[in-house]
Image 1 (spheres, rainbow, N blue to C red):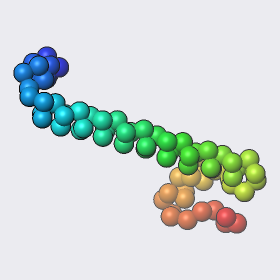
Image 2 (cartoon, rainbow, N blue to C red):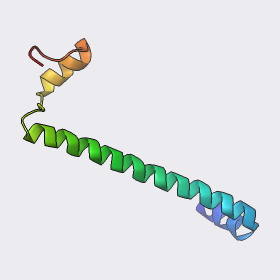
Image 3 (cartoon, helix red, strand yellow):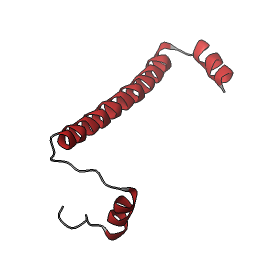
Length: 75
């Protein structure tokens, strides 16, 4: 597939190349934005936990929350 794509790129006009570049560049930026957003969420949760505001859960507690759709008593 790579070879076919390289052949197509080598034989393409400038408009197609610009479109391909835009698609590739857009996907790269989206991945970076997702990674950065995920990192901000994780760091915010960590800060809450370290400040004593947040809480961690055991595996069983997390499983029960998912199944029952609610947090343990007191939270």
